[in-house]
Image 1 (tube, rainbow, N blue to C red):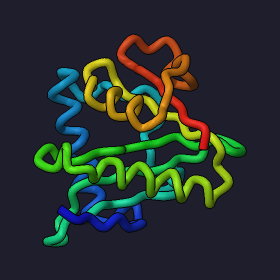
Image 2 (image 1 turned 120 degrees about the horizontal axis):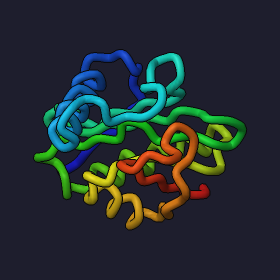
Image 3 (image 1 turned 45 degrees about the vertical axis):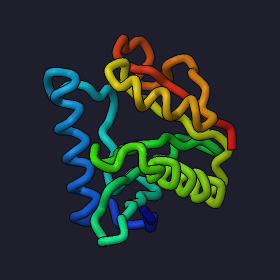
Image 4 (image 1 turned 180 degrees about the horizontal axis):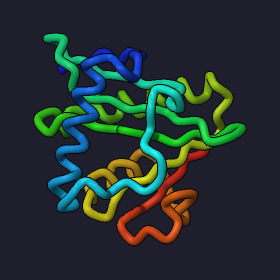
Length: 151
């Protein structure tokens, strides 16, 4: 399967649909909708948002970058539709975000995932991220797991 990853507006319908699907999946995993410490990402604070499309043009994956300070950005709303997991599209989205992060002068990418998302943690560790102490709004959060990668 071939995928195309493109930068899109945060508020575009396809990305919004992917983010809604992610939230619904996490609501089921965590038993409610109160599973994100800190401020939810928005068009105002996400510098780059990408969407991956399959050969038929369907939006199947997404992810964004939220700048946190000089040289530092947080990976946000990384999501792949369940039927496309294992296809390699997550790696394409992640690498596209890292490439755009470098272009923005970012030298370190951080992220937060949850204890009830073991496959996400395995993915990030496999792709060169390392566990770090929980940062910012995730400090002290028992359900949060944070990782980072120097670019």
